[in-house]
Image (cartoon, rainbow, N blue to C red; front, side):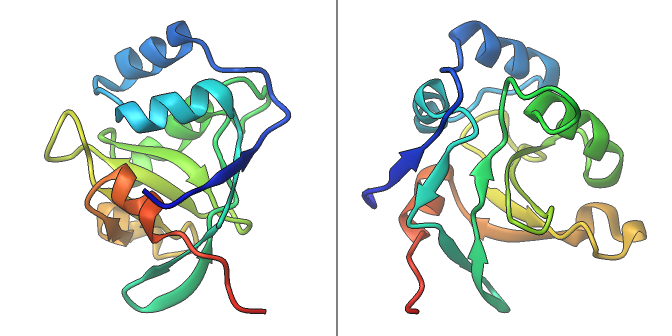
Length: 149
């Protein structure tokens, strides 16, 4: 696996928080994701960039927090976006521009692929606005790189 350094100033996420999210969405989160968020809630990775099929250098800004109040935590982002991208697509991270990196549970209850949602895409496109990124969370982490400055 790609060595990633995480930075976070938040308190750790508890197993209770994780089980609550899994229950709300009706899914099982990837084990490697759970281990990371337990220590790095709202964590920012290094390396941090990944590529889409037609777009290079997309920035993984940070994991969505389990604890930040006021609309930017993982529960509130899920509730705010599920009517646009579907109840089986769970945002777990963002880029600096408000786009979301998501687990795609539309065809599975565990080990989901990763998709990217551009919030400025045609709002009528719904789930079609999701762009495939990786087959799994671990594969996604292995894709991360630092750009050449």
